[in-house]
Length: 435
Image (cartoon, rainbow, N blue to C red; front, side):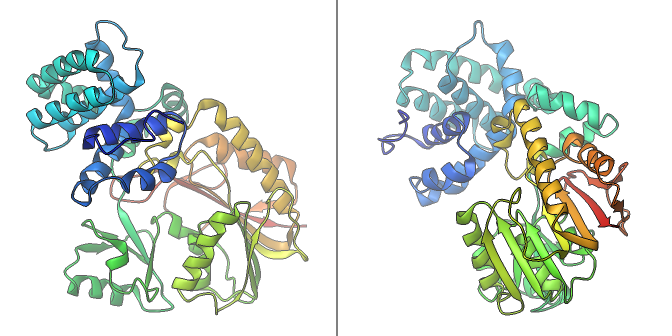
């Protein structure tokens, strides 16, 4: 049990932020710890808490790179280092007054039990506040990635590297997918505007609306009625890249939390849709989403907790959507804890698992059927190279070029990179079984 699990009532907001960041450093995902820690924060402080946690994670390695030269000797203390990053983030990236950022952060150092190092933190933060332009420039020029990931991206995307580094530091847009079984995108867009909500029409998905302001999702028009879902614009392209699924038998492998499952049912009426995922808890979300969107009455839907490396269908199927497990580097803007949690050694294990699922699911597909391979990664080893290996091992596989100019054409498939104001990093390849 961490020393920060109890006794949070005496901690100021910065100390609570630091406590959350330490949990991530110890290997916990933000999705798991954030709701628990947020529940202990006063309502009036929650927006700031959220901003400081996500913002510091987003800039983590950039903050680290500008901190190291400021230390006379290494601190070897992850708590105090985290205090420094939170303090620097406030000075360089927010409108919080410097004196407030410094005093609150120094107080946090003391509250967390490191009184003797509070002077070091105070001195460094004061120096940065005096020399803000220089340090801000250094922050923006830093690539802000763990070194192993920077090397991989430099190798995979040399021409796009600078733009990619910039994009990965940005906040991803909040994008809705309109449920066209309920209403058209234009009709829902007009409802948003008439409610005083700032938004614009997506340019890459025909059902996307991008919000231009912060909102409480559950308070948007038609949430309970199932008029929309939240889904990244590039993730929405899945339903455009599959063939017509009406009267077909479809498997959505690795389906949780169900965004693609729901979208397929909004657009098509398959004879049967089997939504698979190994995690039964996450499948609850799939059922809840389909219920809210009122899609669970439209089709013969079978939600199964099963392992896609071994589960076998009763019959060969017409289409398989395989949103394969991946490093999720392409969605790092939405999940900035990936910067800290993902390790170089994870990648090969993931690639091996992808290959195993791909080979097994291919056996469930009928001749003439389609497999759409998807990841939310931007690493070629999980995408283009994975599919090159697949084609080398399967002479009965044929790539079907997708009718789109989006993204970058690869040897096989297309890679969409995360882009400011647009969608996340996704890879798609459509494959037909020929024999």
